[in-house]
Length: 115
Length: 113
Image 1 (cartoon, chains in turn blue, orange):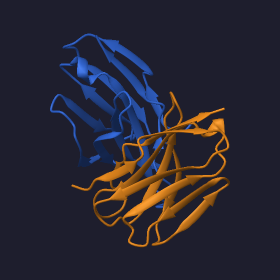
Image 2: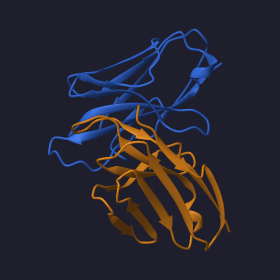
Image 3: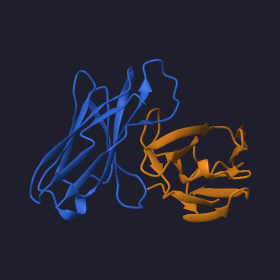
């Protein structure tokens, strides 16, 4: 258990639908990052939040949005889903309040299948 | 924007052989990180290198950061089947702390017993 919790682990949905992926960062971490990993592909950065505020944006589609709540958990919303959105979505956390960086801690991911 | 290139993309080795993956950046990096992702798993942080020319070892794994801080390598001595997975390097993209990092495409290592 990495300390980063992602739910659900698996999600199967139809094209055109909307889903919400949830992430709870490791205790004490302030930053949450969302990454997309397609089959045999690298990790594509989507978006970063730090202590509730959006800090950086990557290759995130307009159909996707995210937020980080006061308790630091984050949600990634994917709408108007297309077949090509099928992928593993990882959440990672970092930036502990102590200020010592020890790399990203990844959750186990949500596998999204759009049919 | 900054890119982190990683080679090779795939590597098959016989158990007991050595393995090396290389990472190159188009810009100078303040640090570089290495992660390992087992099949079906999530990336796990291995190490961070910060200083020019830095070399760090973790058992059979040796990590190097180039003098110009634009390249890095991960070398595994005498591979074992437990080394199977994809190894990613990652460099910070942006200034300041806690910024996003850019991941290389990864090197998928297959170890043949």
